[in-house]
Amino acid sequence: MMSLFNMMAFKRVISFMPPPPAATYIVFHPQDNNIIAIGMDDSTIQIYNVRLDVVKSKLKGHSKRITGLAFSHVLNVLVSSGADSQLCVWSTVGWEMQRAKSLQLRGQSISQSDTRVQFHQDQTHFLVVHEAQIAVYETAKLECSKQWVPRESDSPISHATYSCDSQLIYASFLDATVCVFTAGNLHMQCCIIPSAYLSPGVSNSNIHPVVVAAHPEDPNQFALGMSDGGVHVFEPLESESKWGVPLPLENGFAKGVPAAPSIGTSGSDQAPT
Image (cartoon, rainbow, N blue to C red; front, top):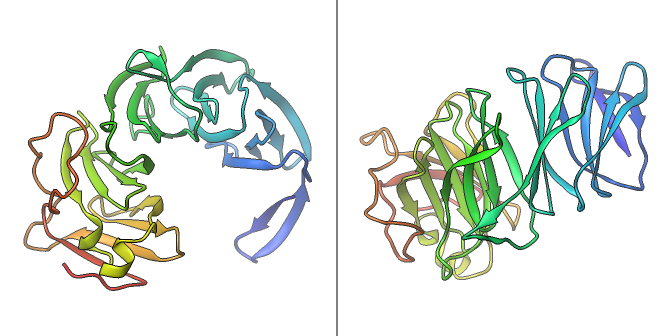
């Protein structure tokens, strides 16, 4: 069941669309908050009008559950991603599919996994995050303009997001490593190893980040939500003001690379800096 709440009174306004299928992703239309795009477990996308309490359109193009949705108010499109590793672009005028493409890795189709999307500040490019790659796509032609792929020996990517100014990309991995990339060319600025922010006992366990959230006003601050329920907030030391310098790595990252630069952290477990 989905519910809409009034944030002024903190009261439920309406409940709608009881499962099955369950909703797996939700996003408001950027120009009309009466319109909600709802990704479903059955691979469809419901375009729901809250005021009229009606489903305006039902979009079909994916073969697995929907794992990501993002609107561009500049291009008037909705971009969707699914567990089928496919990207779709939909017009917000008539809700027709404009184009679709499956993610590719080294010339072959990649395994099925959650794929997430997020628009760049310019609203014409978007970030694609998959366990096996981070990529930036140009929306009009749905072409990949930049891609970063971990080495086969590296841990899968768990999540990634743009900084608030879209100049950096913060990415987390299943081994609890965190990397900071420049958004313009996907060059790695620094790599933070687990022992830099987790206590010794925790850093040797399977606890890892499941979500990365960028600060809405400070482009150099971000938070990690951990699999054990903990939250860690990161920022560079005041003496360094920003995240590192490019590391001499061609692709992927080497395990054991020290954090660069030093970091300040806070959260459920205070970590050394």
